[in-house]
Length: 287
Image (cartoon, rainbow, N blue to C red; front, side, top):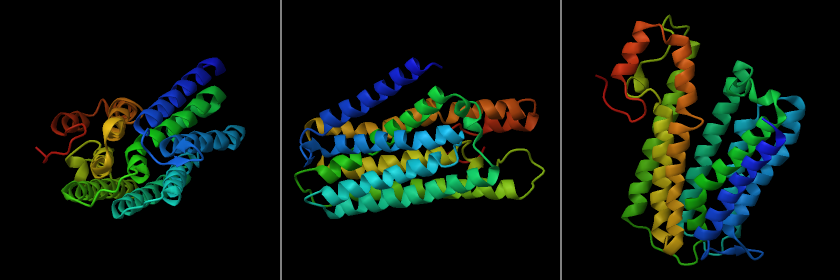
């Protein structure tokens, strides 16, 4: 990949983030004349580009996921501190995002340190343009997934807590629990020196990617909670869980992992049986 192509795609990602922030955040509170969602977009991309410099110089991806989680924390803290009318709902949203980011960020960082690297970046980090694009896309990931939450925090009108908040909070709890348990089960499987080449027990008997299922469910819960204060174009904030689903299902998540597993275990009859009997994403009882 050339620098011109990398920069072109990166600028497209920035444009998408800015367009969504401006359209959905038209009635949002402002920071120095800038809508709060747009300020978070600037923070998200700016933090990635700053981190890219030392990462490219050392050709290291070790702090990629940790920095992404840190970006979520900085954006959500900034939104909370700037908001002139922080509600109980907003406090819950901030807490939920913070808990998720701290848990996932430290988990992924620890895994990369333990394994000595992240195989996703074996080729990418050797090319500065491709590596820069990866950091830019992480900026888009943060910007879009946080959009609904930031819109709620920046809403000018306060809306009392209601049934949508209860439903959203329950979905977040379910999704967070599923993701955490799935990650723990896979980590323990790798440490167990099992004779089996791949994990197919626990939640992994219900879905081939239960951690991603949990991720989608928890962001759906946050979007439902945030929807209580949405009006007009701010309903565009509901793109957040849709974006998470599309990226994990068709982008940098499941397709890469499925291809990798097919290469490793494709000749295994047990793996072929597992694929046929276990849903790709949505969790269903084992057959």
